[in-house]
Image (cartoon, rainbow, N blue to C red; front, side):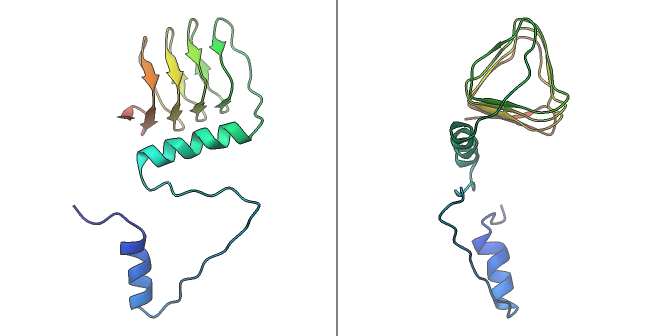
Length: 130
């Protein structure tokens, strides 16, 4: 497979073409390397720990903070969300679903009775279980 590291692909090409590459440091901002699915999930969880996010309530749904629930999300009854769940805009979570320590990208669609723990859902239904 081709290399996927930005250092080996993009930055090397930029330097070889004569462009300069620089960096910026800010002591007050959050930054972490998210080059792997595990580090991406860890970064999302760390952000949830630092932010105070208010979420709508859903009848018949148990929500354990911290969580982030996007706009237009539908969550079915008897579902459990959190702790540490990031749910992207317009995602569909059917009845009897459990989500913790997971990230759902926008427009994700789950199946009834799904139990997600340490999972990333992308392109609607594709899953990476960690």
